Length: 361
Image 1 (cartoon, rainbow, N blue to C red):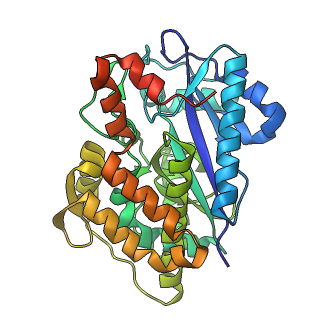
Image 2 (cartoon, rainbow, N blue to C red):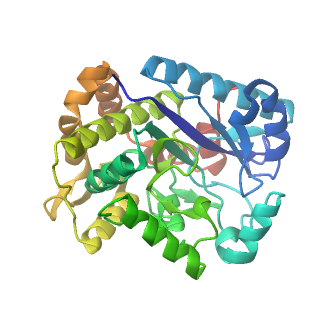
């Protein structure tokens, strides 16, 4: 039986004339809440609006939900006189310090993390996949680690920041990496090991609470899921759902490996860190580092290796054609980052880049 899965997405609220980010997310979320309820929410920064799907067992159902929630969110934004943009970082706007949303928890975060919150204007996509228990989630996390740079390269959609080209395909990942508990997770011997480490981080003040565990893979603190959090928000609903199906397949294959007693690879942290930077720097189009071998390899080739690795799971869920088609489209036509740069090359206008990532509506 296929594991249930779902998506959380964040979008930037932008002015339709200047295309700069504006702190109007609360109004958009209030209006969207009439249709989505608690599936629409604000985030730390007042430029960001978030929407979530319900758990699904089928890719088509997930796709319908993502398209529907994007339509609702876009309509709510239009009714408030603004638009929503699906980019991992803001293309235009006065970003630092970021306007922090109202609420006691956000005020506490600002008091603890200060300048980190000031530059936290980023939009990501989180994929949740159902797990039988926390022990399985932690062990699956170990098996996911070697594939995280490849997933990061596939999802790269954040080359611009505040009016400049950063020279990176996924600048969001590098801004995110500055947090004390972020990036690729450590290798955990057990759920008890995970809890002991988190307890030490809470005790010393590096973590404010369990919600500030920002590793790119973690057992959800609220749901019976493993949460994969490393992707930029996708430019289109189709790309978001194909990526989620690929992640679910990788989780299924990893869970089977755990059940079979296979030990997960444990690449050196230095190798994993370098592979992350190469993925963020070049995206899918560039050369990277295969952390399983420690040797250079293009991310296009690694994407093919990932597809081969998860083939049994994709066949089992019936998602093979959709996911393979989505990966081939990214390899041939470019990731969101490459398409953003192509939009700029047309007329040399960053407003065209924003227009290229606006949600329809």
